Amino acid sequence: MKEEDHSGAIQSACSALDDDGKPKRTGTAWTASAHLITAVIGAGVLSLAWAMAQLGWIIGISTLLLFACVTLYTSNLLADCYRSPDPVTGKRNTTYMDAVKTNLGGNRYFLCGLFQYINLVGAAISFTITTSISAVAIQKIKCFYQKGIATQCRFSNNPYMIGFGVAQFFLSQIPNLHKLSWLSILASIMSFGYALIGIGLSLATIVQGKGKSTSLIGGSKMRSSANNIWNMLIALGNIALAGTYSQIAIEVQDSLRSSPPENKAMKTANKIGVLTMTIIFLACACSGYAAFGSETPGNILMSSGFKKPFWLIELANVFVIVHVAGAYQVAAQPIFRLVETMAYQRWPSSSFVINEYPMRIGKSKFNISLFRLVWRTIFVVIVTVLAMAMPFFNEMLALLGALGFWPSSIYFPVEMYIARKKIKIGTIRWFALHALSLFFLAVSMAIVCAAIHGLNQDIHKYTPFMYKA
Figure 1 (tube, rainbow, N blue to C red):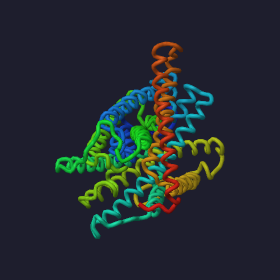
Figure 2 (cartoon, rainbow, N blue to C red):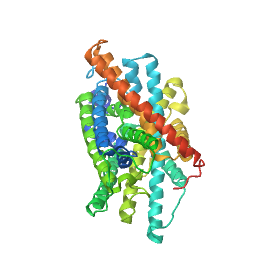
Figure 3 (tube, helix red, strand yellow):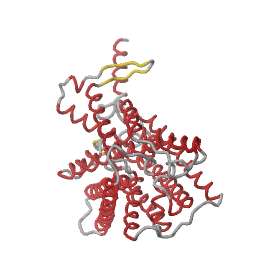
Figure 4 (cartoon, one colour):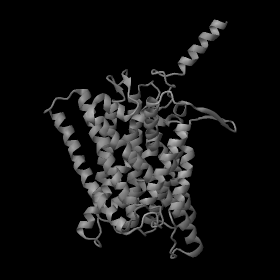
């Protein structure tokens, strides 16, 4: 009996481990799609009505559909890079950088890391800014309710950024992305909630006959042609950021269980995520633009957008805050994982880095790592301070979108696909793939220029850490 018990214990321990000896993954296509939806239906979705106002109906809708199709195509290319050399039975690449290193190697591995992690840090900053704007919007709604809509109500964003940073200090102690499924599912529900509220209020405005005039080609007659072009480029950046999730795609795929094959499950998650994203994006962009016309604000649910009914606007902004709290972790966990993996490899015998201490709060058990506690706290503090220093919404979204979209969503998936399939130079497919990459490189460079131009104008109008909305 003892031998049988011992054998059963060994089998049980082995069944709890994956093919690489790590804890068994339990994710499905549905949990992966929840992570993706959490990442994409966030800070950017509420700016899409403003983007549509800059681009007009024709270019705006075409751009949203184009970015969705390209994102789905290149994300599926990326899904096949999770295992190498075979996409089903090969060795796992557990991070985006691992996939690039295996398939491309050399300097492009470091270039990938630079783009990916700068963009993820930028996303965390963007989520902190978004939270403060929503919190200020709630305060303004209360002010409007008490003193009237015509009242000038202004509040500092800083206390809310600090409060959000404190909340992220605790959430950041969750060890890894595998333990975040519940938070991503909750955040996804919240994202649908505030997106549907924005769509509903927009449609109600249109039905009541209060919608503003719109244009097929976008822009405003009140601005110069040059300013209209700058805004159109910033709008493209907002759309690019709204639909970008490649930076976390491999990490999300690494949460999937091994059967069915991860690449097949991830492609299903990509379809669910991109289809959901596209429907929500088109609904938000089109209904918001039809409601506000050329006067569409940068975010339709903030204080410059809808103001009534008071309770519904407050609820929508609460949904935004809860959603962004989850999205922050989806963006930050790959950064945490990189730094901690490097630390484990560099100091394998350090008790400060390696040791974990069991803790209990009520019935919940968890482990605390001193290194994780210190390093993740430092990260949250730095992100919060940077957000307080530059709370510019649309221009920041455009810059992040341009910096992240081309490298992570186009260049590296295309180059890895060419390398894996050994596509010969000069063939039609080789030319087509490089034409796709070069086109979006040109678009991204133009967006970066426009975003820097807009940020430069904002900086000259505003003193750091003293912004009031």
